[in-house]
Image (cartoon, rainbow, N blue to C red; front, side):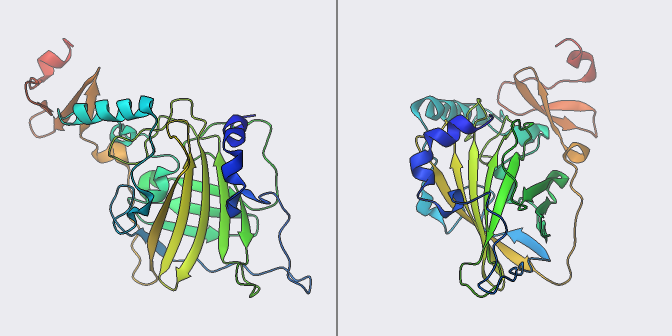
Length: 282
């Protein structure tokens, strides 16, 4: 079953997280037997902090705990990037960011809560996550997707009869993926497991405690990502990467498209400028 090996390897750690317990339980009820109410997370949520992890102001997580093999991959990505090659950043070619990077929310998101599914709708590449909260178990086969397959459970942490935390586990995530645009890539075996605890910490702030378990890391890496609430004058902007993407990859070389002149501009020192007659020769 896809993802089972990763869960087994991280079993000891999962037992310490609230997100790992009772993910498949039936919807909870209060002492009177009445179902708890779901929270109102409507409106628009925009990223707090920088585009990369850890977010500014929340650096307690430290740098990604890379294995020696993937530290070498990261170092090579940095060398290539210093030459103008966008190594270690799959969305540069308009691939979806995938999990967990999509939750960085380069563009705002909307959260739609229903009794059986919570939808996370990201402006970034018009991505939609479906978090199933209907008590289902993992399917025998998960068709890999960039956002993976997510099962969640609502929790009432303060016992007031209203759910206030959504615990999520995501498996079956397709690659290639990176954590952010700095060149930290996830393991090519795509056995990543992502755990989340999403809660509203005040009227204007949502926090997502994201733990990534991946074979490129020496251990689980936890990040606290926060989002600011926008309730009025909301503007949604369609973002289609391919519509305005100017990054062109030919073989192992990266170029920048100059529409005005119809040429490919160099991105690193010593790289030739390509005009239409020479592009076909490559």
